[in-house]
Image (spheres, rainbow, N blue to C red):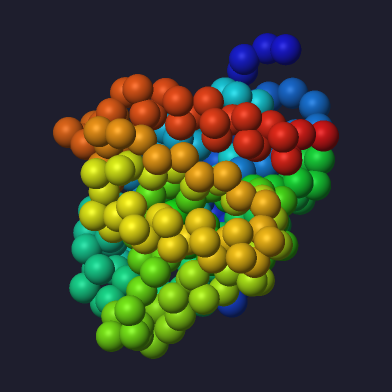
Length: 247
């Protein structure tokens, strides 16, 4: 198998048919492949998120990363769009889930799709991955240190009206969770609560927590980066998707 791939920014129809930018990366061959929707972190639709998307393509997947903050500041930089989304109270759950679902539909519609699609999210994207597992027809999900899966009532809003953990019974696909033991959100107690909820609901899941790692330990461009945790995490991610998204 060759290693040639194509990566580019395109537009796809997102929530309610809105055209939104999306970064797509895919191997250049005719093999039937599974797809991965990359849900970017709260800092935005940035170069590290696009590099993650390319990493999935290098490992044999069709991959897309929708710009979830586009409508908050159309035409602005990723940083400014992310700031606008934060100022508005965060990207609305309904819109985000609609955009992620549109990304999965885009991947499944590619000529060399095998019909399977998974999601992976980091930071706020981890929360959105958990929501996607409960609200979308997907084949596998990965939550990388998703803050806000457990939300107290005083943090709920019109934009984020539900604590994702309350939807655990609706999760319809296998879920992998990767966390840092030094993280504050989710902290180890929150991770334990998530595990208990998933076990109690009889869900197919697997959680791993890393010593000496906090939030954003996958982020190679930040001081939070922890190479050992990130390398092991990537191995677990690729094994997980290999198990559930292969032809």
